[in-house]
Amino acid sequence: MENRSGGGVVIYVKSTIPVTPLGTFNSSHLETFWLLLRFTCMPRSVSHTLLGVIYHPPAASNALLYEHVSQVLDATSRQHPSLGILLAGDFNQFPDSLLTSYPLQQIVKVKTRGQSTLDKVFTNIKQWYD
Image 1 (cartoon, helix red, strand yellow):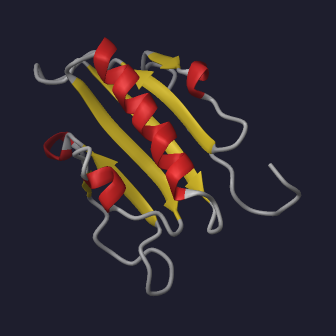
Image 2: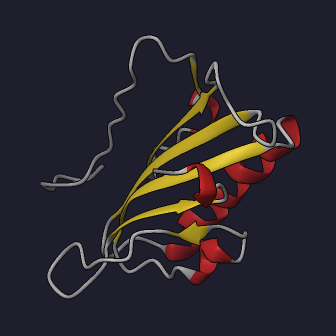
């Protein structure tokens, strides 16, 4: 990305968790990282978990990020119809409605930066998230 400080994404995964990096969804224009997880003990209603980590800078394009996230969710859901989804990150200026219409629920209920909730987690498996 440009010469600026801040931003970036990282995911740490315990070595005993089976994980597949989804590098085909990497974009040089967006700060996202995608993993497909297959835990050994999962509820019957969830076959895999898609974990996406996102940093959306304040001046970044909402439309570009939404298009990218939609493509990843659609493609992965087609391959794994019982997909659990967790999207986490810093969503500066990104409207929740673009993801809650997928439908995903935003589960962070506290202010994370001053008077704003920028650090969020969206999921379709709220009942399994702790």
